[in-house]
Every structure is written in structure tokens, then in C-alpha cells.
Length: 82
Image (cartoon, rainbow, N blue to C red; front, side):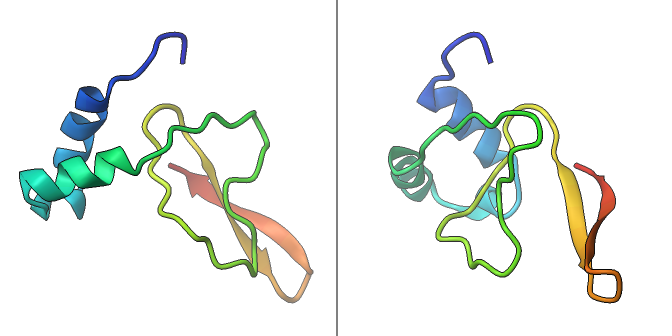
């Protein structure tokens, strides 16, 4: 991300994305005020297994690899890209 992303760009994006598309304009604006933009490095975990996240993660730009954990082999398995 080379340029700054404005709150209006984020609001427009979320307004088209379920389940945020069902929010009223004031509720969406309040959500944006509490939002924090984060940038992750390649390979950096966004969420970790067995830890309940304290936030909702929405990927605005780029893609993520979804991993599942195979209890039999005790290894992560790639489930796909999103």
C-alpha cells in the first residue's frame, strides 16, 4: 500500500461487503472511527490457532492463505487463498 487510504474509501468498501452492508450510515461511520489499518508482512500470521481474536479482520488489499490444522499429523494444511 503506497498511498494513504482515507476513511471514505474504507467506508465505501465496507458498505458493499456483507455483513457490513446491512449497517445504517451512522453505525458504519462509528465502526470506521474505531477501525485500525494494519499492514502485514508476507508469512506473518494474522490470527493464531487456539487464540480467540479480540477484533474482526477484513482484508482490504492483497490476499491471505487460509490454514487448517490437521490433528493427526500435527501440521498446518493449506486450505486455499482468499
